[in-house]
Structures are given as structure tokens and as C-alpha cells.
Image (cartoon, rainbow, N blue to C red):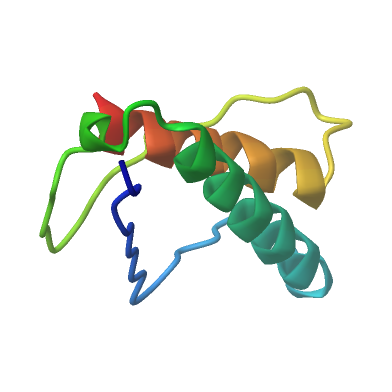
Length: 85
């Protein structure tokens, strides 16, 4: 069976508390992890179709030493969980 296509369009990503110079690293980690999460979705039908103006991923609580890459990874996991569940 051929896997279905997953299309995600994020019009705006609000990054409060992340310094401007760290945003590119956050976004790169976010995109990479989100792609990985969707590739692992088994079966692909487990992802719920959604068209929502806003999808809240909730607050992410990480140790103060976490950098933008770790935060991007956690944010992508939270978003994927919201789409899967």
C-alpha cells in the first residue's frame, strides 16, 4: 500500500522567548523532527486530517540549559502528538 501524503502548512510560528539569532536553529530542528515524526506515523491513517486556524502545542518546559535545537525538537514532537491524537 502506498503511503498517503502529509501536507503541513504553518502560516505563522510564534517564538516567544527565543532570541532572534537562535530562531534559524530552532526552525531547522523543528522542521527536521516534524518530518521524522510524520515519516514514522504507522499507519499513515493515524494522522487526523485537520484544518484549523490555530493549533496549540502547549507550553514546553525544558531545563534552562536547553538550546534552540532541543526546543525545536520538543515543539515538533508536541505538534505531531496533537495531530496524531
